[in-house]
Length: 104
Image (cartoon, rainbow, N blue to C red; front, side):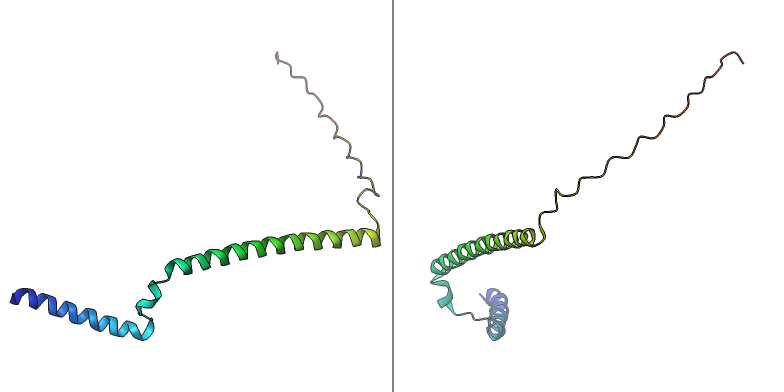
């Protein structure tokens, strides 16, 4: 019985001191664990809301880019097809053929 107490007492004392020190930095009340399903549901809803908002912002951004491009075309005209592409440069001349004689 004394051997168990000798080993258990330092462990328990260390554990309680550690919990006491931890309580200064972290809230260790048990009330946080009773509503974990509700918090999980709230996080899920918040994540879905953020995803919808992100999609709306992406669509707004695309719409604004298209509007800007259309206004630039209205103001400046569409020059994408106005100037034809330059012609391709001519091919380089073929290298001269050298006839090798096998007899010499």
